Image 1 (tube, one colour):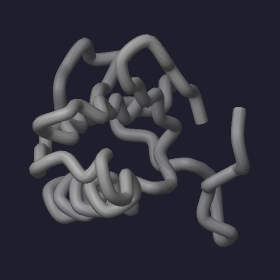
Image 2 (cartoon, rainbow, N blue to C red):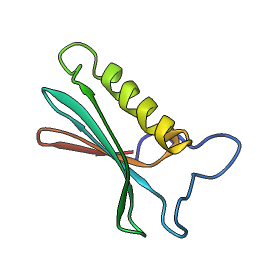
Image 3 (tube, helix red, strand yellow):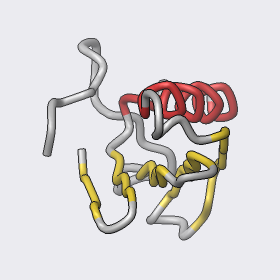
Length: 93
């Protein structure tokens, strides 16, 4: 895991009980996509996509999808454990 992104004031958000939600992010050549998953309930809670920025600054697209997910769920999406992929690389943080 990378750096701990939990808010300093408390634990990670929990949506349905015992299992933390997971944010799945795909950095594609056309779009950066994200889906917030609730594994305990087996549900997709929110999705977001934005034109890809991998050719210039990958963090621009990341910030856009995180802001969209955050707005949809009312929680800071950056505090949720995430898995991200770009082609053959998968990163868990």
